[in-house]
Image (cartoon, rainbow, N blue to C red; front, side, top):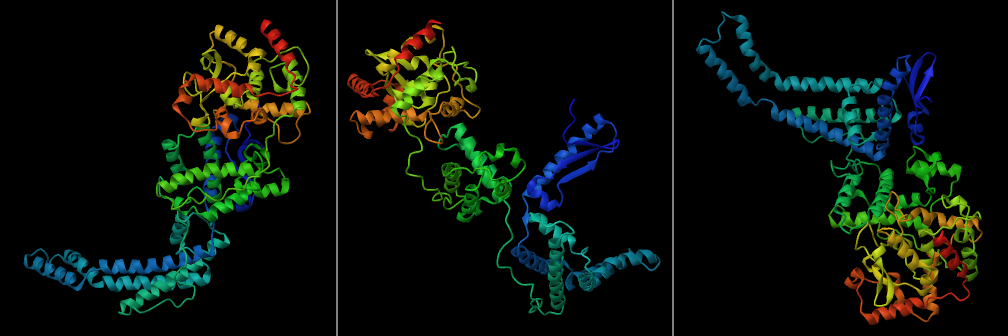
Length: 604
C-alpha cells in the first residue's frame, strides 16, 4: 500500500512534511516544513500527522490574509501609540484620589480611633488601618515615579536594542492590522524602535503635565500625526464572502444556480487579490482596475493546472511569466467582471457601496463574430462523417471519428438537426419533455418552456416559445422517434441527455462536438461549434427575406408573454409561424442518407 504523501521516514523516526506554497516561500525563507512525529510506528505516525498538517495549512491561510508593512502603517503605529500613552495618563489621573477623598479617608480613621477600633495596643492593626490612607497620599507621586522609571528604561532599551518593554503594544498593533511583521525581521525591529520613540515622547509630555504644563508637543521629528490610517478589517459577519452568501440567499434576480456558482468563483478570485478581511466599503475603482489587470494575465484553467497548485492569483500570474501558459480571453475576463459586477450592484442597492466600481470596467468586445455558421460544403461533409453515418462506438468521443457500424441516434444526433431547422438552443432542445412535442390544429409544434415535469430552464422569460417542427425534421424521422420514446413510457424526449454538476444541460456534448469537428478537419481554431447551427438557421431566415425583428421571437429573443409560457396561440399566428420555420432551407444540403440510416437505426 502506498505511503501517505505528507509522511516521511528519516532513519527509524517518522516526520510530518509539507511543501511551503509557492507564494509563501519568500516569507518563510524555505520550501519545506518538517516536524518530528516522535514515533517509529507508522500507524501512530499517521494519527499524529493530520493535526499538524491541518495546523500548517491554517497557518498558511492566515499568513495569506496578512500584508506587508507600509510607511503609512509605521506612521499610524507611532502616532497611535503616542496618543495612547497620553490617553492612558489622562485616564489614570482621573482615577487617582482627589484631596477631598484623601481627607475623607483621614476623617474615617479618626472616627474609628474614637470608637476604639484602632489603638496603639495593637500596633500591626494600627499600621494596616493607615495603609489605605498612606497609599492615597502617595498615589500621584508613586504614579509619577513609575512613569519616570519606565521613561529611563525605554531610553536605555532604545540604545541597547532591547524590545521587551514595547513588544506587547507592538504585537497588539500587528495583530489588529493583519501585518506581516514576525519577530526577528527587519520590519519588526524597526517598528519596535519607532514605537519606543513614540512612548518616550508621550511619557515626557505626562511628566510636564504633572507640573501643570499642557503645552508640550513632540520634539522627535518622527512622532507626528499620521496622514493616513492603518488598514481596516471587515466587521464580523461582513467580510466580502459572508455578504456574498447573503446575496446568494436573497438571489434578487432569480439567477440560476450555475451562474451563482460562477459568480462565487469570480468574487472569490477578487478576494484572493485584496485579502479575506478587506472591508466591503473599500472596494473601489482602483481595486477593481488592478484586479482586472491581473485577470488579463491569468492562465487558462489555472485552478485545474498542477503547475499552479497551492498558489494565489498574484503568484499564479507571476509564475506564469516563467511557464508561459496561454492566458484567458477578453470575453472570459468580461465573464469574471460580470459576476463580480452583479454582486457589486447588490452591495450598492443595500448601502454597502455608493456606486458599482465594476460597472464601466468591461473590455470592449470585438465586432467580429466568434461563432460562424457552417458553409454548405462543411455541412455536407459533417453529415457524411462517422458521427452521423456510423462510428466505431458511441461510448466515448474518441470513437466518433472512427468509421464503424454504430449509429448514434439519441440527443446527440437530433440536437444539431433540430437546431439547424429551428434555431433553438442546444439545452432548450435537450430538456424537452415528450409532452412538449405535440400536435396543435394539424401542425406539430415544439414548446420550449419551463412548465411541466423536470428541471427545465430557459435563458430568459422571452426564451419560452412555440416553434413549429420543420417538415425536414418530420421526414428525417423525429416524429417516429417521438412515438417510440412515448411508447417506452419515457417522460423526457431525450432521456440520456444530462446536466453536469453545475446544472448545465448536455455541457459535455457541447464541449466535445467542436473537438470532433477539429478531428475530422472541419475546424481550426475558433468559429465552429453547436451554435453554428443556430447561426445558420438565422441566416436561412434572412435569405428567405425576413428581417431580424420578424423572426427574433422564433429564436427566443423577445420579452416573455403568457402565450409563450403556456403555448396556446391563435390559429392565424400558428400558421404564420409554420410558414416562417418552413422557410428555413439550405439549397444543396444532402441529408437523404440520414433519413435512410435513421429508419435503419429504428428498425435495429
